[in-house]
Amino acid sequence: MSVSEKTIDAEPGLVDRAPAAVRPYLRLMRVDRPIGVWLLFLPCLWGMMAARPEAMDAGRFWWLAVLFFIGSFVMRSAGCVWNDLVDRDLDRSVERTRNRPIASGVVSRKAGLALAVVLCLVGFLVLIQLGMAAILIGIASIALVAAYPFMKRITWWPQVWLGLTFNWGVLVGSAAVSGGVTLPAALLYAAGVFWTLGYDTIYALQDIEDDALAGIKSSARRLGGGVRWGVLVFYAIVIALASAALVFGGKGQWSPVLLPVAMHLTWQVASLDPEDARRNLMLFKSNIWPGAMMAAAMLPL
Image (spheres, rainbow, N blue to C red):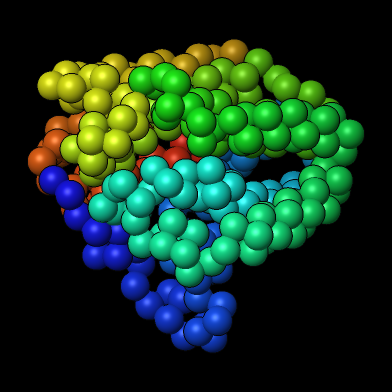
C-alpha cells in the first residue's frame, strides 16, 4: 500500500506556526516527527543508567542527560539532512518521500549541506562536554552515520546498520558516566541493535511496494511473508540481551521488570499488518514506550 508522507508520516501542526521560509528546513530536520529523537536519546539513557557509578552526583548525571537530549536532537536532525541529500533521487521514486524538501527541490543541496554542517558543529560542542572517552567513542560513530544511506543499495539488511548507528549512544552514555564501556552497557547496545531491527522492519512495511519498484532493499522485503516471525525473533533477542545486562550488572533479580517491555513488543508483533501502513506507522511510533520502560528497568543497576 502506498500512502503519501504528508498524510501519514508527519505530526501536522508542529511546524505550521514557524515563518514560511523556515518550515522546509524544520521538515528537513524532521522536527514534525520527534519520535526519532526519542529513539536516539533513550539508548543514551540506557547506557548512562547501566554504567552509572554509585557515587556519581545526581546533578551531574541529569545534566549529562540534558546534554544527551540536545545532542540527540541535533544529530538526528543532521542525520536526516544527510540521508535526504544522499537519497534525493530515490526519494523521488517513493510515494511517501517524494515531497521531502530536497527531493522536491524546495531546499537546495547547498542549503541542505550547510544546515547539516551547522547541526554537526552544535553536536560537537555537546560532545566535548562529556569527557575524553565519550568524545572518542562519539567521533567513531561518524563512519556509521555517513555510510547508512548507502546501505539500502547494497544489503537486504540496512536496518541492522541503522541499529548499529542509532544505538551508539548506549556506548557514549556509558563512557560519559564511567569513563568506559561496561559489560551491561555493551549488552544493552546489542539489545538496541535488535530493537531497531524490529521496529524499523515494521516501519519499512510502509514502502515495500515502492521499494521493490525502485530497487531499494530492506529487511521487510527480505523477510517477505515471514516478517511477523522475523520481528518476533528480533524482539525476543532484545529481552534476552537486556536480561543478561541485568544479570551481569549484579541485578538479575530485577529481570521481571522487563515483563512490560516484552508484553509491549509482543503486542507490536501481534498487531502488525503488512497491508496497513497507518497501523504499522503507529506501531513504529509506539516504541517510545518500550524504550522508556527499558530505561526504567535499568534504574536498579
